[in-house]
Image (cartoon, rainbow, N blue to C red; front, side, top):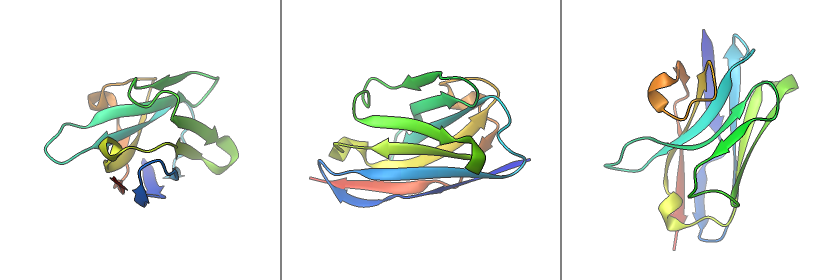
Length: 122
C-alpha cells in the first residue's frame, strides 16, 4: 500500500508561482509513474503532468507546457510540480496519483493523495 501526501498549495496572484510536493510513505514508488491531476468545481479530474519513476519520461498537458515542470527526488520518494506564470484557469484541487505506467487517464491510477487547493486570483 502506498500513501501519498500533497503539500504546497495556496492562494497566489496571476503570474505567480507555487511548488507542490507529493511524498510517498508505506511502500515506495518503486517503479511506474506519478501523475499530477487537477479538478475544478463542476469539472472532471484532468491530467496536468506525469513523470516516470525510472528514466526521463514526462508528459505535460498542452495547457501547462512551458509553465509547469514536474520532477522527482528518488531519495526522498517525492515528486514536485513547479507551477509558474499561473493563470486563474489553473485554479483547482491538485492531486497526485501513482500508477503502474505513464498513464494520462486518472482511471488507471491505483493510489491518490488527499489533494491540495491552488487558487489563482486575477
